[in-house]
Length: 257
Length: 311
Image (cartoon, rainbow over the protein chains, first blue to last red):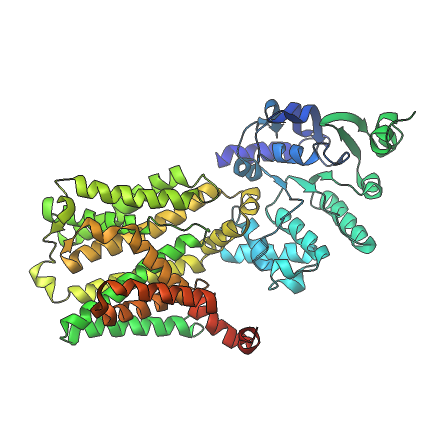
C-alpha cells in the first residue's frame, strides 16, 4: 500500500502546476433534520491558497470535518490525489497528506511543545533522532525553538496558534487545511502568520485551504475564495470578484431593501 | 543510562535484593509476602498502563484470572511443561484482550469502564459454571517441577520485576508519548496519521499480556486458584494502590502496592473490618494528597509543598 501511495504522490509532484489535488462533488451532510452542508462542489488546485469564508454557521467547520474524514458525508464524493476518499477514515486521509488543524482544542494541552510536534512526526519517521531533528526544524520555522520544554497550555495564545501549525507541518502535508488560524491574533502576529503561510506555500510547496474570519487577511493572501452561506456555495472567484459580488455583500451585511 | 537515572538503578537493586532474599533467606512466609507485594505491584502497574490512554480497565482483574486459569489448564489438564504453561498465560490473555479491545475501545465516554466491569464478572461466572475448570472451588495442583521448586520464588520475583521494567521501558518510548497524547486529545494524533483505535487496542494488549503472565505466576505461587480470586475487587484494590502511590509516575503504583500489601498482612487480624481500613486510607489520600505519594514527593521537589498545604 505504501508503494502505491508513494507512486501516486510522486506522479502528482511532477505534474503541471494547477493540477486538481482535492475535489468535492455534491457534498452533503445532515445532522438529524439540519442540513449543515448541501450540494457543495469545489476543486483545490496544486500550489494555491484557497479561502473558504462565510458567516457563522455557514458550514465551514463541517466542510473541514468532511474532507479530513472526521465525519462521513451523507452524500456526495470526495477525491484526493485522484483517489476516492469518500468515507475513508481520518487516519487514512491524513496519511495520504491532507492535514487539518482545529479551531478549538487544537493542541495536546498537557504536553510539552516538543512532545506536541514529535507526535506528529511519529507516523512518517521511525527513529528518535529523525523525529527530534524534524521537531527542531518545525519549531524553528514557527518561532517556537525557545519554548520546547514549555507545557502547551501555558504558551501565550499567539504561540499556541503557531504550535498547531507546527504540528500540522511536522506531519508532512501535501495539503494543509487551516481552521481559523488567525483567531485572537494581534496585528503584528497576523502579519507574521500570513508571511508564514506564504512561505509554506512558496518554499515548502504545500497547498493551503484556509478557513478564516479575518476578511482583510483572506483578501490579501488567497488566490481564490469560496463563499459558503447556509451550507451552500454562494460564490466563488478571486478576492476582487468575491468582494464585489452582490450576493456575498448581502449575505454578510443583510438584505437590501 | 543507569547513571542518568538513579531511580531506575535503585529499583533494579531492590529487585535483585528481593531475588537474593527469595534464594537465601529460608523464611518461606516472608518470601511469600515479597511475591504478593510484587504481584500486587504488577496489577497496579498494568491498571495504570491503560490509564495512560485515559481508560479505567476493571478487566485487569479478568486478564489476571485468564492468565491464571490458562496456566492451570495447561499444567494440570494438558500436562504441558512448566515454562510452556507459564508462556501460554500471557499469549491467551493478550489474544482475548485484543478481541475485547477491538469491540470495546471504539466507544467514547464511560462505556469502556462499564463493559470491562461486566466482562470481569461474566468471565468469573463462566469459571463457576464450568466443570472442567472446577466450578466454584476452582483448580488445584499447579506445582513447579521438583528440580525448580527451591528456585521458584526467585523465578516468580524475577518475572514479575521484568514485567514492570518492560512496561516502564514501553512508557518511556515514543509509544508511551503517543498513549499520553491519545488521553490528552485524541483528535490530534488522529489528524497526523496515527491509528488511534489501533493504538488503544495495542495499549490494552500490552497491559493484558503483562498481567496475564502475572496471573500464570500467581497460579504456580498459590498452587490453588478459584473464581473468587478474580472478582472486580482485584481491580478496585489495584486502583487503590495507584491512587495512594500516585498516578503520575510508574513508581507510584509500586509504592502504593507495597505499603498496602504489607499493611494488609498486619491487618488480617481485623478480619472483615480490613476493608474499612482500605476505604479510610483511599478517601484520606484522595482528599489530602490528590497526587498520591509520588505527587507529594514532586511537590517537595518543586518547593511548593508548604504553599499548597496551607491552602
